[in-house]
Image 1 (cartoon, helix red, strand yellow):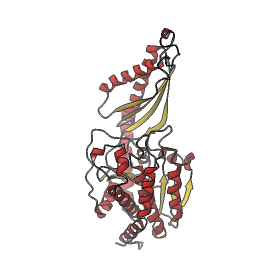
Image 2: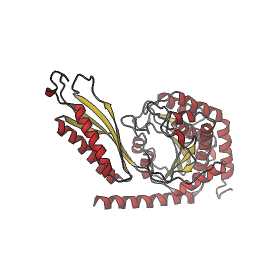
Image 3: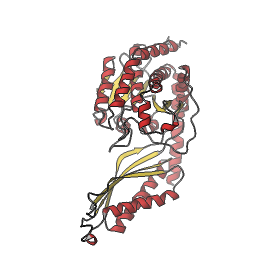
Image 4: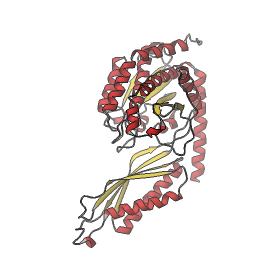
Length: 415
């Protein structure tokens, strides 16, 4: 199919698939290397160096250390003419204990593969593509959510669509919303004393923390079904014969809409205050990362991404209704520009998620196939978006309407 500007979309797509095949071994090797060398968020120095090195090698113009984050990057493809702009998004941080148990090595190499393919075609594209490397999507480290400062720094300005892929247990287009998420750090300050000789002279910071945990356990019965409150003790004391003078914990508070999520934050803080009041400890708290917004699905983009995956022979199913949902800083992106991502199956549900079994699955034949399908489908979808004015218009119209509804609902909730 050739449009009025002489652009043969199907020929460009075929060329993009060919370019991905040419670097398939390199993409797989890079993904497996990342699986063997996992790095936590904002510490992905080796991964970022390797990924940007590949983009450099294949002709992209790479800006490293964007938005004040040493492991973030923006790779602009050469030779693109003025016109629409598409962002292909990469994630590459791992999790504590389980490594790449969320498969971000696949996300990264699929995005890089799409970038390499499109860089070879950039002079023929009716617009531009940028590959954005976004650190710390997992909330495992303070100041996580790398897409948020990248948004603030303007790297999504002028972007007509943002696209990415994510491994899972089956192929689907993510068209349901995610949960708003807050991250909270708490510290309780008590007074030390000998736990046997004079415990009555101490103020037990661990007791304060445990009162908080028990209060939150009771609170969970009274929250909406979509809400999630979960936490860990990050420091519980030093020695059993010392009344703990300091304890710390970290919580994630999630809900389907931001107004209710904010209410739950206040209630969790009240549980912490209860622990401090009951024991005489002093409590401090802070948000250790900026809130992750809920995902605003874009069906116009989803239909095109689905069609391209099916053209590759992938069995794309309707997204299953789940009892719960996760959170992602890609939701923040979706509030600013039309955005969509596809799930690509790499293992069965028995692997769970955020697990060592998922990390191992990224190195299997099925995991490797997801890298190549992800790279090809992202490149093909970017070509569709750059070439089809009506598609972009529809995606923008849908996004504007979704945001108007979202804003009306938020205003109603506040009243």
